[in-house]
Image (cartoon, rainbow, N blue to C red; front, side):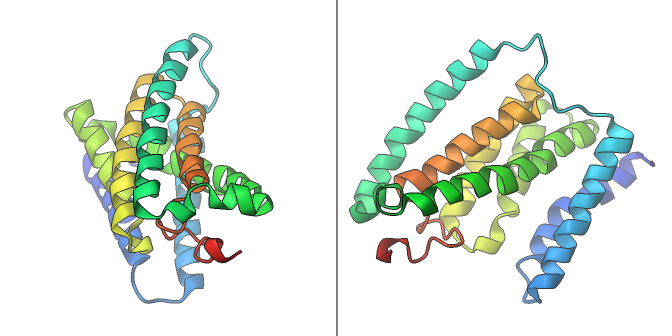
Length: 216
């Protein structure tokens, strides 16, 4: 596989700029799905054949450090989001888990398995291992990663989604830089994302299937 700087830049622009932007264009949904699947298939091929990456948690990893960091960050997120929902729409606070637990559990499972894991393979594992040579500092690498991660959510057409994914991208990028673990960064991503559903921000963030949650 060619890995010249010019090739990597072209690959980066195609996969992380042009492809996400194309999903905002008015085209048939099957075309968008096909484009995403083609891109993801290419990423998996590169990871498996050329990057020789493994997804297990390293034995010498400082798990205590990871979970301490998560506890502090998650506690902050819990407080801020509860205050935000109470201010924005008090009736939405914990509405889905309290009123439709089956939908709630379904959302958590599907989101964690079918959304979080693929996103972290693409935006952390592939991105950081593949493009580290393109950036002069880890700070720049993390910032660019957060921007393109946020860009991937443009199709929601929701400014709150863009802001939250930008912040999340920075947090997840820092986690991957420090721990080099797809599993751990996926745990973090799933924890924060599922909390947004739990606290009552699903409809605010225009997540699929949440538009009519307050009428269930």
